[in-house]
Length: 267
Image (cartoon, rainbow, N blue to C red):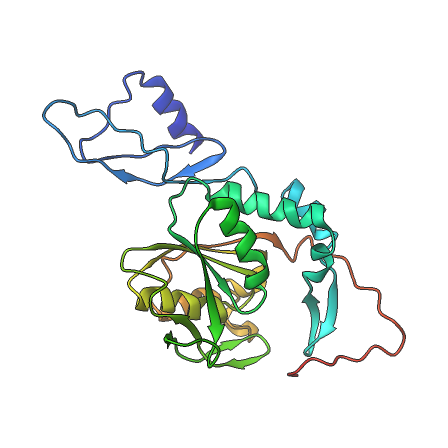
């Protein structure tokens, strides 16, 4: 990318093919934007409203600071269950997370923010407000009228019924940003992506505070579920997933009282 940028800078005229241009910067990833050619001017038309701001990197300086407020617990039979309650009680940290996500998606051109039941309902609305976009709830079955449902799916600690969304919330061609607190095996996100596609929409990205990288593409003999394989099998592997923080920097163990019992619903 850096070499390409240098070559582009050396080309003072910045001429491109008549069909499209590709913008690049050191801190921002730009998407190719189709630009119809015209007899009058074949120069590239700059589309500044179609990019993701890459100023904040996964496990970067800001992420490492936020990770201090994401302790892990033994819960639901999982040795390290990451709890967002740690940063929710710190308004300045919660605000920083909202600001980071709003900055990342401010210029990409989305029509709505969809949050997943239930922690996506905490994170999604303030991000949607910051972006001045509608917020859409994707709920568990039986919770909303006039809804459609995706198929059942698996998560790292059990099986879940499909998510639902109200029929009139996503229109054909809508560009939707999906928000949740954490992505591991990708089961919940895959269900949400399916819902957007059922409505005729496009998923711009699935964004989470935490991404458990061990499930992205584990070795076949590891016995771990593969998010990459799941997305490929569902024909949604073109949908990008981004997490601000990975397990590599989530090292804070929760301080538990003596006699703590794992009282999660499933084991």
